[in-house]
Length: 195
Image (cartoon, rainbow, N blue to C red; front, side, top):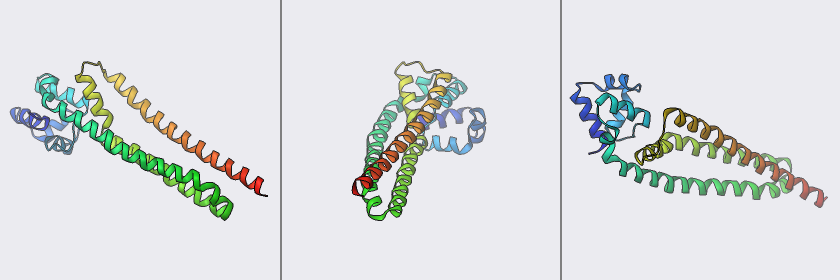
């Protein structure tokens, strides 16, 4: 049985509207509707609240959906991240390769074009991070880890989630700045040798 059917069944058994259930698990009515229509999955905290509210085990609540979640993790990670990783890599290479010729042949206008390419690359990297969050890639991984017997308590989950956000941002920012300064250094060196 799928999770959406389970949630709908137990909600109906308790004579709760979507809005009433939403209040009890601290989400919006639209979120409950999305869960029941299989548009997305609840996070581990919501799953724990639902299993407690419905007075059933977590295993009983999501048993049939673990395989679906594992497939979704594979698809999201392998297909989307592989594709977006390639696009981001190409953008970074174009920025790094074209910065010197643009600066040599177009002077300051070349630097402006390089800066625009750099900003587009950085913006695209931020879009990838936003896409990962919107699709709850980490949340699905945490559910699978939990069902495989790995212990995840609420504090550790929030700490790790917080660390990932800041670490990813600073790693991305650091990489972008290093690339930018290497390009500027290459431009400076080439201009000194050519003059």
